[in-house]
Image (cartoon, rainbow, N blue to C red):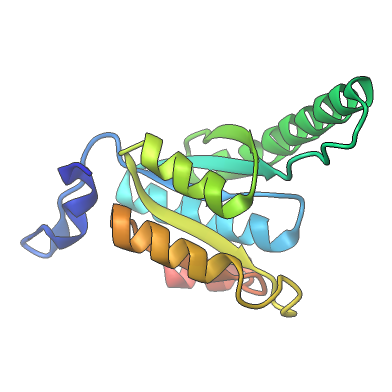
Length: 173
C-alpha cells in the first residue's frame, strides 16, 4: 500500500507527519462499547486533525429467506444503520468538531473490515471496542484482523475497552 500508512514511523521534532486525508475507521453497532470506541477515536482524531469513518457491518441473510422478505429485512437493516449513524454522528461531531462519514456493508465482519481497508488507503488506524464483560466472544475476530490487517496493510488496530468512562477517555488522549 502507499506511503500514507507509513506515517507512524515518520517523526520530525517529536511530532508525527500527518497526511491530509488520514482517517480512523471505527466499527460501530448498537452496543455501548461501540460508542466508547467512537468517542475515543473522535478525541484522538481531533488531536491528530484527521477524519473518522464509521463502519456498520450487517450479517448476511440466510439464503433460505424468501426474496420479498429478504428485501424487507435488508431495507429495515439499512434504515436502522442510518438512524444509528445519525445518532452517533451528532455525538461524534461534539467530540471532534467534525461530522464523521459512515458506510454500511453486508458480510462477515472480518472480511468487510479487511475489504474496507484495502479499498481506502487513507485509513490509518482501525478502532474496535470490546465489551467489558467478555461477552464479545473469544478467538474469532481479533486473530483474523491482526493477521490480515497487520501483515498485509500495515494498519494499527486499537482495542478500546468498553468500560472506559468519558473522563478516562479524555485522560488517555
